[in-house]
Length: 589
Image (cartoon, rainbow, N blue to C red; front, side, top):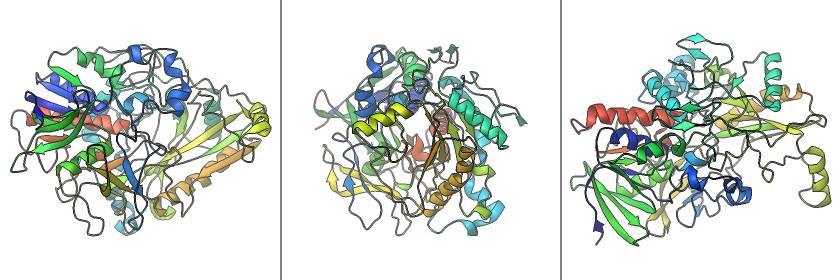
């Protein structure tokens, strides 16, 4: 029989960005809160101290900060005709492990979605008619608008400490910012960071082509800053060790830098590490949760943790897995279209061009994860879907963001991969290469989904979650369109060598190379319980005292990195809990 601990007002599953936000906001309401984190504890001091943290072999190659597939993984297949096999060696996406989650090792690119992306089905129908929506595409609207979320985007940017330049301030288009973004009520908390040579070179080419370049919005401090919780950030030194690393000098936005030390000082908050939640326990009528059962790694036993409110704030894939195991909704069936849990799993569509210049020196060791100049001229609200034959869009970025020598040795195609020829290539081209990247949207489809695997189980005997996913023609057409526009711009910069990498029509999903950790959908937001797993306040339709946060709520993926929307939705949800739910617990919709 499981050990039972004392009842709490709130139990939080996962202590990353959304768990930290829920923790500090609800602790301010005086609630007794316990957060359960599957991984280990980690903090800027002493865990990210210099020079230990910038060990590229340990963190960049051997993925020290990531989830261990031997402890928890998924099975993967590309269609219902294939047998799913376990994801045993991390490649395509890299879930984080430990306190702070993926918010600890991310690059810091922070975006808001365009308003049109939150009502994409309506936007398409109004401008081109629903007949252009491809068969099998689950195109939808979010049950919450950009205007409703704008104050919460703004607050998250203040908490995270985002550097940038507003391009649309209260409807006024401003030079130096993104003219195609949604309106902002306030300027960014910090000004943009300096640019590196490659991003300046890209900016000049974009201006010459008539595009609208702007500095990337960055969860990287450009100056000293104190956020609303009293947490301090220091200006970035462009060390180039952001992606896959914790920041050793309080410059990168992360739960550690922005929230956790303030939260840990609150007497009504407690967190436990090495505590893996196995399932959410439901009352006999199934309409509410009574708490969660977790595995106490130190004691090697199951523990039942009673609570009045359960907040699922772990990585999106883990949230979906827990909900499936706990019966927090009906599993989605792609053949009948019934059920909601696991529906609309989506990813990201990327491509790029590498440019090599014999006489240019780019100093690739100088950079940061969100460095770069961007354009949004080929984004969702700038593309004519009817004429182009696809739905979606992409932003472009150029800038040095990875100063790590093992993983940052781009070479022209045909260069030997080892031996004297490889050494000669490195000697000639190291520091003489730059890139332009396309970061694109990804729609949701009937066949791309998540469910429980019928064969494989985890160390606790639970079915693993199965991912059925493959690229679809719509997104591949979008990717090829970006290629057709990017290559002429790159050629205008007169490189000595130029090479492209874009997935073509017919490309099949490959789990081995890294792409992004932007896994979305699975417990999507919806207007009705028939369409999705959670309502407009991220409250589960099944049990009104269970709230699910994170990118699992996305109806389809945006063209941008997901953290800004994840953070905005988290503050939107806790505001609803504070102002509507606590005084009268009930379904809010």
